[in-house]
Length: 287
Image (tube, rainbow, N blue to C red; front, side):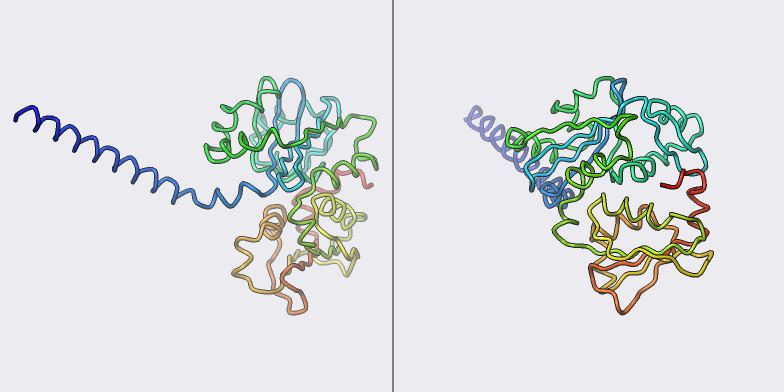
């Protein structure tokens, strides 16, 4: 009789332990439910190692893993008044200047690359490991990537001192790294240069085009100090609209305004003296 009670208590404890585990798993899944919807979107990250920089675009829609390898000696423009530096010196520079927050801008203004995370590695090839994905992007994305990686084609292109800013590099960026959701969504952007600095509108328009935006108008207007980022449609929907969030990330200092003549997927960017001064555009050799 006593043995039966012990067995019953043991089974009861095991059941409650199992139930507790199920509840914990459910809570974890609920808290991370948004990640399930993100997995099939294009995913970008960069790695910085002794082998140089590598820009990754994992696109399940295109069934591709595209990688741009940036040679160490390739000179990159660092905004904020730092001018041009060899690729292998940029990370050290930003660390010494305590401006590591500029790394995303370096990637955007040189390659129109919008990275979800920048990872420092000893060997860039370790990006393939399950540990790398769990550590940097979480278990959901790691499991998802593991389940699809064998179905994705891998392609590597090299950017060096000879082809940086060339038509060939432009082709790689707009073809291989552009965001598929932007391309399919045909998100339109108008870019106007009101800063008085020559070439600024074309400079920004080219980056937005590389990123996947449809730049349908580029021009200049009367010089103004204040920059503006205009949107149309329902503002509440913009909170989860990737195209808008990307614009806010790099042009967040611009005054946000509503324009009735713009649609939900249409934006207008007026670049004034304040924005040109912020990134120190004058330190960039006008293309």
